[in-house]
Image (cartoon, one colour):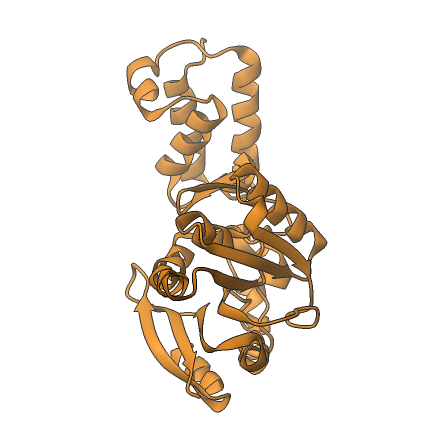
Length: 287
């Protein structure tokens, strides 16, 4: 029987649904259209065209990987984030739509600082793919950033993403354990740190537990270790009127606010995700 894009989507969807995978229809269409390099319009108008045998095998191999709970975008090796196509690697967290909320909230901050000073220096702690820092730099040419990560593999991926998106001249990848190798002061600090309690990690969905790096997930016994380090280190790494924005877990707003307030910060803004959960906190030094 001849394989077509439509028949491969149907095959994938049926298998995903049988396996109980969420978003079976969307995942099937994403996999097939991207692996066959077909636009949405082409899928509609030419979905019944024959697919070469070797290409169909590539799709079926990807279907097997998804059935093993490997996320679609990890299979594809890339994901769009705030207008940037970002490469993924085993060393990086997959940037998710919730993190775009942090970028949105920080855009007005960096633009205001850049308008006043002519430039804005951003420090991205736990940069991973470089998503947050690169999105801010891409949105405002006056922004230059340093992406910090403990993982050499993540830094390699972030540097590649900077180059592929034409931002390498305004992005530095720095190997550092949080602030240990950071020098100088910054106008803005951003971070999507690990914030899941260690005891919760084994109960996470296989898509996350098996494929996102532990370094980017495990926030210690109460999930708040990274916020304590960031709040303490930021007091000397920020300009006097600097601003810091962090992503948080849905139930961590009060605790994270207390941590930052104890270090002399005041809450400037809080934002929720599309599900209505607390997701982003923006702080400024009270001095």
